[in-house]
Length: 507
Image 1: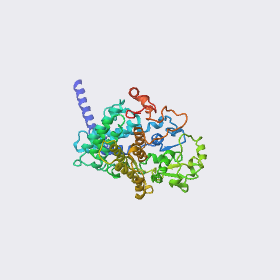
Image 2: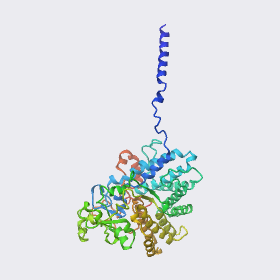
Image 3: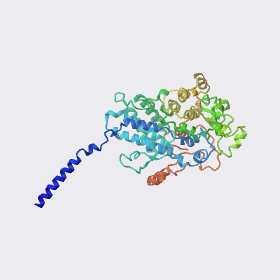
Image 4: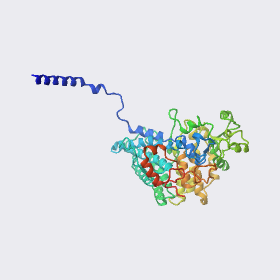
């Protein structure tokens, strides 16, 4: 009798529990929560996040002598040839946490979905661009394991050798560009090109040309083969093909944000850059520069003092801090160092300024070099002129007040024809100008080509052994969370300092 009672009680309790549980899952499910995310939105975030952080002004744009500051502290970097790891980590953190992570997730989500084939190829192209920036900046970086923290729980990614990375980048760009298909689903929400696969193909092949030309010193055979393949695939045809991040009030330009806020009075155009533009009567100087004539302090940099006339522009010399700069200031008859020329923060460096990552101008200049080397049939002089013309026309895309008239453009092009005896210097000096605001690309091409022929920053007490910084240092966080792989990379590549050359950067 007791056993029967226990059995009946158990059945009753089971029924009650079952009855109470009915509808529990439904009740605790948020019916309006997102359960899946369209991977196209991840691509848009990856595109937007590829816009460069403000630290590129401290290092990359400083190394190539576009900008300089006499101040130390958070702005110490290329101005003093010192290692400032709170800044050198910025590209690493921005790109790995967003661009690499998002593109890896897109590739994982679309690899077996034929209906999203174009999105897959677009992600592969954008991922390749991101890794070119990363490996050009640091050298060996996580590549094969990168972005797999959420996908495969790889929390300690191994670093790949840059040679391996570059060869795979070339493969990825070649395959993905060829696989784009206008007959397949168009990804209309794409913020870069609105899903236009022709423009994406031109981007892919233009990046392939960039990748090939990066190898001119280390592997000329592969460089030539890659450049030829890119040209045959189809390069950018006009400024309408530019890969550009368009900023707005919700997502402002990082460089513009810094130059319109905390560092508005602290960063200046360098004397080598301003002098080159002045000495060649380059009309871009009027589009780029402003000088607050007579300003003796930051608060005196007001609109009433602003002057964009090229004749009055004076670039800040390199090699001084905010104490010793008083000597050159007095010698030039200036009121203070606030009286030097700046990148105009109301035009090129305004809050909503676009960020140009890969351009028709750059592509034409690289093509000019490839033709000059005899790798591609064509006219190096024509491509060279096209590159200059395209960048001058690009000025209007920053701001209407930076537009250059066609007469001024044609006059400059006519006065500065390509001279075969010094073509490499001319082409890559123009690339230096055409890549203003894109610090990582200017820095990479300067190391690759050796042009323009800059005089090393003479600041005393430098922390480098060579004439120029050759790479940026890894984040300190890698030492604490990924030390074994960090140590392996350093053992293979060389010391984690500013002097170590990346694989393709040969003396």
